[in-house]
Length: 290
Length: 149
Image 1 (spheres, rainbow over the protein chains, first blue to last red):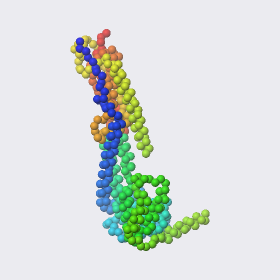
Image 2 (cartoon, each protein chain N blue to C red):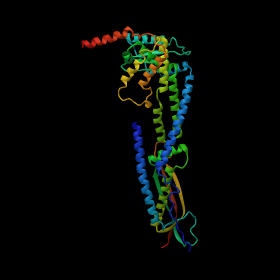
Image 3 (cartoon, each protein chain N blue to C red):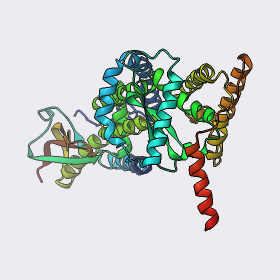
Image 4 (tube, each protein chain N blue to C red):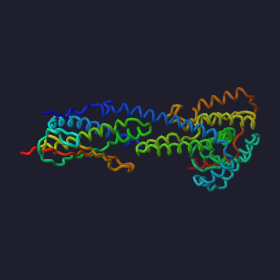
């Protein structure tokens, strides 16, 4: 009689006996690498094309999202300060050839934050805290010129263009990857890539600001003093330069000094106007009385 | 950041438990395959010609195996590139062999020494629903030939 048997199932043909982490690691590296390359290319393309967006369109865009920063109701002195900031900016850019349609609007923001920033639609925001720290008009002009330079270089729209493109790309990839876990990973990466201005943009803005100061005052004295203010703010925990969007303050001071060496420096520091001094005096006297 | 920690914990748990469970399962499968080796299974539709008169009955074995979180993520990544989804291959191998074993076990309990016309069916549970860990079912069935006593 014929004899039959079932041989035992062969091992390692239907499934791989490689370590699963090896496969996983390779996939993860390839996916992240590919994604990073894609994002870099897209971001560079978006960055190159965003400045081609007409300023009027940027202005409309800014209006549609301006509810983020509601216009603060300013007191008499504060309005005076805002007016002063606006006049100073106007004088600073008087020598510049502003592109057609470009409008600059400086806003004075009450609040102790030592900060200033430029955003879409040519809006520049200067906080009360920053104004209080400024040792001279030249220093304040450096801050204003730096923010104006961002707008002249179309940095806010470039940042927006990059951000939108990157998030759109991430959303599309998340749609392709049919797994909630992958989708979630992508969202996290999107958060990391949304950054403000790049360090190169900051350097370029510094350089442009120095040119503006030189043209207006005939010297760049006082410009470096803003970095001392920022350094005092950054005292806790210096991040390594790679992780920061602004170049290290020491390097920026060096850039100012290099510029000063290459250009003729004539003139003196301009003090801040009276209202600023008056406000400070008032606060010190009340301080003494208490 | 909190999300990332949850994700990594889930991934590690999935990997740890999944790996231990898989190793154990394979060990148990090999042992029981040795034990049930006397019960023969054939895909042939008819019994061997030499077979004498037997009582016949349907026997089946059913298995549902769940995908662990780690395998889910690994397979999700694989879906970007294509290729062997190794994470699922071992899962299905376990399910098939386990289903056959359960079928053989039933046949052995009935006193059968042979199962003919063996077929395998598979289906996935919670297919397509997003964010849910999927599970796969494998069903093995055949005709058991039971010796007349």
